[in-house]
Image (cartoon, rainbow, N blue to C red; front, side, top):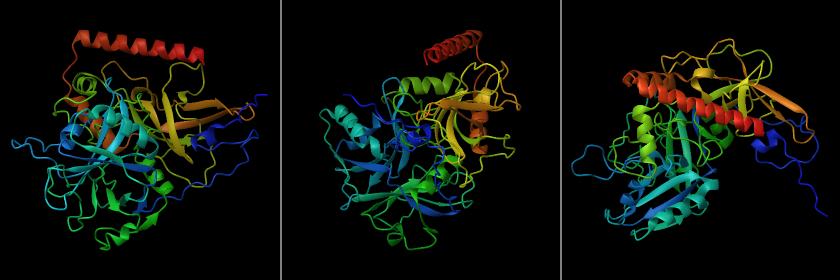
Length: 433
């Protein structure tokens, strides 16, 4: 006799926990505390892959969105700093968001250069398989590092860097902390003042490697607090939020996060990315959202309440206008903690940003919601959400729009046709649900 599988409610599914067939309405979720202004966190949800060999740099150069060489250098020097980047498939969609770190050679010999690739821990074997597929006869070795062999950290000091840090891609050291040769890392460029990304040998506390208070301030906090801080900044991370083979780099704010060098040569997935950057319009972006059930929030940005008990919809749930007929999807919910989350939002529906001269569908009176059925008792559930555009994201989008040349009439008609096809595909998908 085949037994039915246990039901999973949306909130438990978001936390990757199996649940029984009983209702989860009475379950009290212990949300993470609010992240401190100064601190650091051990990122146990991230894994590392080592790439070593004479061809390691050229191998990565043909696969990632970032430039492995110093820009505009006639000698084509190899970069000495870590960086945010992505692996794409041939259609230009994201396979993995990563950080790349150069490891200093102990004897100064760069012939056997080694790089560390930081990726979502759950994607470690998948990315390793992807790298092996492209290795062919390249002179290099690929290896997934064991747990505890090296540790990934995030450290931050709020308000100490109001804009993007000055530590740039052409720096001469592999770490923002030149006096610590065992520590490699980079400034986390995904949002201004977001902090540093660091990798240390072993599993010891970060303080044992950086005892100087000027280099590392505060104390260690849980991973959950780092996730809250990341969501408040509107930063998606890992394939739980940047959906593998579905998410696009520009919609995932990788241009904003300096993960893409639009001047470098060929790499897998380059064509669509470059064409969209130069001629297209990015109509959707990942934004932070406020989740609520009562009156709409009046704040200018998301506010995290650790005591909030709000049911979270499953990843990929459609966002629609509240009230009236269902209509066109305004975006997709990606993840959340407590009363905040991340969502892929249509800018001209959910925000006041106007991308073209054709007018916007946005109204400050509009509310948006996600509706779903609780799988444990088949009861309908609903949560409302409000999207916010961080100041640096707004500045980046508007600056990019100003640089675009006026579209030709043929381009406008083509854009309208693509929008219509996309809308029809969404309506067809909704009818199938």
